[in-house]
Image (cartoon, rainbow, N blue to C red):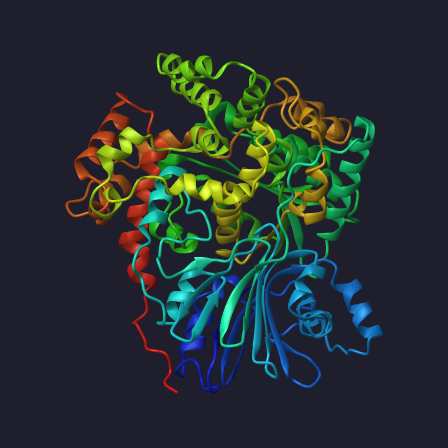
Length: 634
């Protein structure tokens, strides 16, 4: 695993593209992503940098890699699980190699297949290839968005990097805010791609590539997230195929020359991964778990320990307390790169720190919920589909009835009454009601129509027919999975130089999951029904029968109250908060006061999103912003 960055000249007479020291600064800003090695390549028209975390061919895998005559160069952040098979094909074509590193196949694969070469890859990656003869570059992100890529245009230069802070270290990128992106963030708790909090910076979407050629660059999609397409297999055949696809994915991800383990929560997803690892490894699996004392019955340490004992793993665990006040939010947001209101990032940061003391690579069960229907909102969407025949006037009454009950009932009622997929997803996931937004928004935000989140959802629909359950999974995998969960998985693990692999997000498994009928994903009140069937006999029965426990989410309110004299006072209740340009301070203070006192605790996640936005504005942006530079003159 690594961090990559670079600057590509779009057109004109080739010249040096960065001043001395700039590429080193961009590269070394990501030392945590690759403490093993630094590599750079600079020539007229191009500058490429990489920090390497050595996983395969520890001694010989120095990046960047070039082809035989030095005309094509490549850098990569990620792992290519089919690199050995591709290496064999390329050798048969006459290509030669000097290492076993997966990145070395890229310049040769580009020579054979051109800009579409990444379509042959199976893995997770952010990568760049430079073709000096054609003055062409190809920059690509993996199909599911497991690895990140940012880019920005600065005059006749294209700047890219694995992390936003590396991009800003170039000094070529402006820091004006994107208010539409922040508006969407206030609803979702994350910034949906391709937007970022900065107006001049974009995230390359999953399954997309940038091609620099002919004096400009273009964005191309090379893979689309599969639309729901139920097949006609029997339930037994689906079960057999699911297990076979998942086990192959796990086997591929055991590729490593360094110590390897697994994140184990005690839930069904991570337990199945550990089970498949155990029967494909010759030594005990190393497993890692973290719990919070205040979580009560939701603390899964005991359950994880039971699974570890069942498979005789080499188990390591850590129990934390919210009262410890050990979290530095400034450092957390520094690693996250963007404001992110999902405080599961706190737990995963600690879990990654624990794992990194023992291994360099860890497998995780992330992605099963989005592929197979694991969240409570998926139950609500399934119910909405089954009740779709109710006349529209009756469904329109649901929100009025829901407001008379607890928040959960109100959200379910809004979901049932939703008129389209975007409205439904926002009813299930959105955190900012229109009336509250109207009272909060100030300045540039007040001038917007508040539809940023809705437009982000509509941009992902791609004309997909509206089946409430299937469409919700389809959207979740392209929004919350990518820009919330995978975002913090990547940043918090790489903060500790740990590579996390996700077998449920192998693109072949994902394409198969799209063919599984709804009835085998959610059956009645049972979520991930087919996975539970497959897991029976593979993991302990109590793991199969137990419902989902959301990591850290159950103690968010308690954590927030514990921070009243710490982060809350420092960031949200200060005399001159940075968020005051966008949000009404008095309304924020009232929400904090009511939440802490217990008068109104409906807005815990909403307040966390404001807190993380303030930390990003106050701490991250000044720290990450290098002095602004002009592009190197011709």
